[in-house]
Image 1 (cartoon, rainbow, N blue to C red):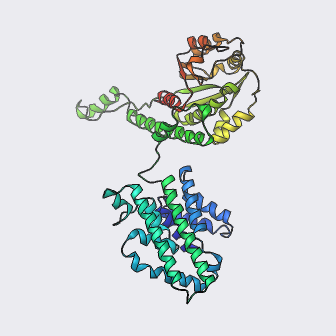
Image 2: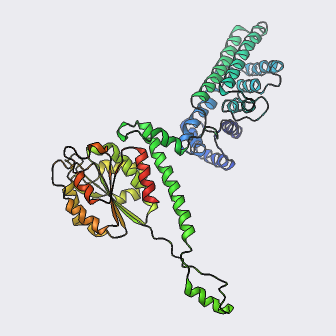
Length: 460
């Protein structure tokens, strides 16, 4: 088991998957607690230890399928030691033709069951002479390197055909059939590996998808137009931004921690040095974190955007001293505890399906504001930023903007985020004209760029 795992780790590292020695040791300890013959358990243990992000999971799946399925010997060969020895002798007979070319040697090793060299070439990470990296440094393109490897595969295919034809006397037709099928399967696997490196190159320093790339691709796409795959990419982009903002906040607080000059303490200590202030003291008063209260509309008209707004609220939990979150349709329900008790995806699913409100009711901003004033008005103070998320469409009920004005008077500021395009704000049953007059700031928020711009402005 240990040699098999180490061979897989060597191939994974050659393909660009980051696997540390401690992770290998942890994996070995975990394998002792399961039945390695149960593939589902075996694969889960390897994936839990070696695939540390969603980006790496797809890469792990390809490597696992290649190593444990495509490179597995056929039963007719595995049960015949003579055929296994014949395979080794055939591959050794190719050595004079291989010479010192590392690409061809990597293909021969791949045929022998060791994918590390070919994975390294396919992912353009090798640094030896004649490797893709050295070819690139000499002016060779990635397309040229792929054509070179494809030519090497065709050359080996022809040479293997000649070698098997030359052994008609010592090998029967069934043995030649099994060996031909075996080598052809391996060569086809090499071609697939090369094609995968073209379509979806493994994670490397040259092709690492950064947070900025994700924003550029999804930034202007409307929330309602996103595919499930783009939804996950957007959630990851939001999480990365919030992590960066938390780091910036931490650095700022560290820089400001010294506070203002403490004149009294400095002068008292200076008395010991005949009035010379050799030691300077500051008031260590870190800046106080603000508080956030949010009201998020989860009615059908803003359903597509509600998920991302709730994701934003979840991400902001650690950036402020206190975040109180409420949802409403035709009534208000607090969901702060759900955010605290569950992971982000589970919390959002519970909020959008299991909260104690009528999701199918007609949106009533006036009733929701009355309930909030009746039960939660005392949580608003001069340290609170109130954020309202909704399209402002009241279904021709009274908007109760005077109640919103009372809430604004108790707060530090009131911000309204509207997931609808600005040109539709003042049409139909929208009451954004009266709501906008009460708010300190009103922002459109219908795509990732606008959402991230708001998060940045709010946190910094």
